[in-house]
Image (cartoon, rainbow, N blue to C red; front, side):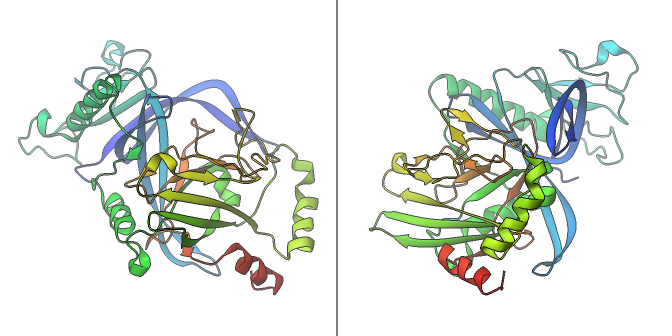
Length: 375
């Protein structure tokens, strides 16, 4: 594991997929993830949101993509408290476990660990405590968890004083994160101000409904304001709540649109002189209706029919890369995450090892291709 990556553990209820719907059980489990990096951001509710990323390498084979790729994962959660950093030694003694219901530490070596609220832990093996981390004489102050712990403490303090911001300040702590940073800071085509959204979709939904293509048709309204028509092409649209209608609905798409794929479009408006004016326009596909941010079990959500738009809540790296959450099974979206308990796939369109193709066709051009049977 990269020396700047850490382990992340979280306690969560176990869910099962029954008749297409996600059902949460009362049984809990602590899950461990390796190769993680951590960033921080202020949530719209003025809480500190911890954003954990991990990744895995896969081979993607399809009619459009046939190459090695990286699946990037993200989990974001709000916290109020951080415990002191401590060393846990391998021991069957339950008194050596983490506070507040944590399990005793029985790993292959000692670890440095701290806890966030009741259900999250960030940790790494102590130097000399495992085969992965040979003893090089360094102390805790030079470890990754120490730096993360300090940053979280500073950010909580700044937040209480009105500080922190809405930008995920991604740092090059891993090869994967460095690739994302380089790609977004130097987008394809050499357009410095090219607006490319970063899209998050629950990984459990992406197994069949995964995203294939992202098209960003950008135009400048004036010297400071740009508007982008973003069109997403998903592999499918699998119904959950109305699962009995899934096959007829798929046949209807073939007859009406000459495709199995689900195609959704929205707009982004960016004001480089005043980011408070930045907007998403999710016309007929906003997952928020009457203040409720609908989740993955919903499959007939069509909020904001007037297309009045909403403020952008998060960005990755800078204001040219707003964050979009695909929240429902029918791919309704929002500026907020309605599935915080689920890991997301992180789609960075056009990245060299990404499964998602980045292009610049308009919705009209894409529909015309399907009409000609080229989808």
